[in-house]
Image (cartoon, rainbow, N blue to C red; front, side, top):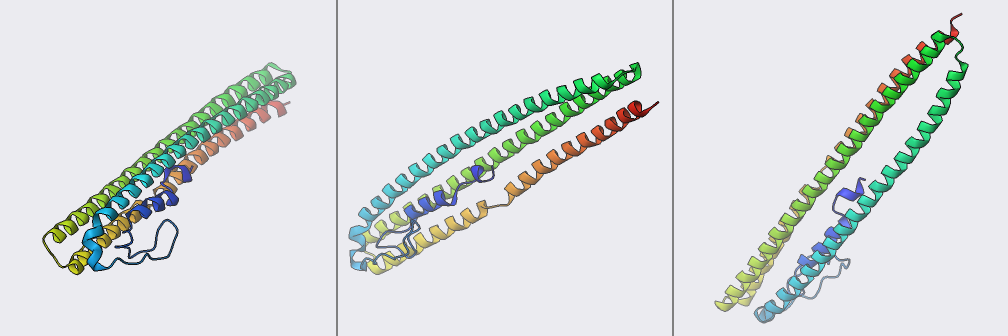
Length: 255
């Protein structure tokens, strides 16, 4: 469960690969997997190549975003399938437990020879059935709330990452527009390129900072909340069972 609700590191790296400046602007490793820094374009060629490189960057970002969205969809499908499988497995186990418990109740009834013992068995059966029903409701509620919290956290992380991506794209587009304006205004290509690269670095740094802020420990809190709720349900059931068993034992041991 834990891994299905947060954007994967691999998916994020795919995105990062699209926003690193191309050959003319690269000052960071290729986040797609290569640590080799491409050769830096000579400042004299900066203004004549910026359009082509900006277009290439945009195309790669679109490609990575499509892959990111496809990964998200695949993750959602697998998450739903796993939940369905777990629900079906739990239901099958409960049906098996119910059948075995009914068999034990039947054997216990067969041991009762007095009216008091038969009444005690019926009371025990009712107590156990009610306690078991309460436990299942508590466990099912914990599971439902857990899944809802996980989905909400996943949605929040997705929205935060999307916002960071949008901010990055806007900052990068602004850097490209500024570079084009500088080139058109006759600004020294060295200065135009330096300004552009500084803006691209600032945009990337802001994106990385935003991405780091998305990584919060909420998931562990959600898991602990579910564990606590389930543990409490089990403890309460066991407490009722011990009291009921002791009461039944006293009736059967009476002479």
